[in-house]
Length: 121
Length: 188
Image (cartoon, each protein chain N blue to C red):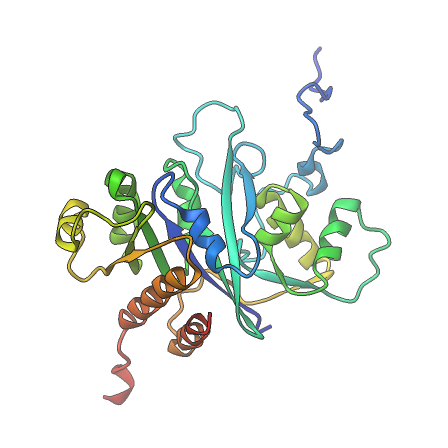
């Protein structure tokens, strides 16, 4: 009888001891619709005492608005995993989310604001 | 909440100056985020075509420009390897448009990007990156070589230069605005 037990053989330097997918209970896609890599999140006031370190690190990064791509970059977590960790934190109300970034922009006003800013660069 | 992210794509083949371009206009040094293709992306991303279970890393470089208190513009460079199209799909969903950087010494490196945005009707400008002084070709020659449609803007830029990159982005946003549907329905 063989059992499939992870023996750490494929573990490289800097890889967490616990495989990151265990932290998200095997979840492979975010449940919150519209969690794009550019979507921004911010920490809510909550007691983070019981949070696992990987989640806690994210909440600490979110004291001001920050995108999922930035969190992934700063914490060196793979992008999709970051998205799922953020999704869990949203569900548990440690984070709040901004507007989805993958809606097609039809608002001329937003584009005009961008033009004004680019012209001031 | 009203906090809004807006995306722009900086595309082009390997070595066309994408990260340089992003870095020249970004308010932060370009950041890199990585995707591990076999580990966490199954079920989210289409991994067809990436055979075997070896994990592959796709790197994305990006920068940001704060537009107003509640709008932030993110500039994403496309992955260097053209086979990671699913990343392009995520990047371009909802994006205002794309800058396709062109190196006249290797025009073919920019064909896949031009095809991609043309097929999906995503507004883009082709920007010839002047790496080493003057470009030996004129606009018509480059347009023909790239098979650019007449309505697709073509311009020259220097990806290292902040002003030049800003002008390129301005041209792109103006082009995207020109393609917005005219609001005529409500007046009938």
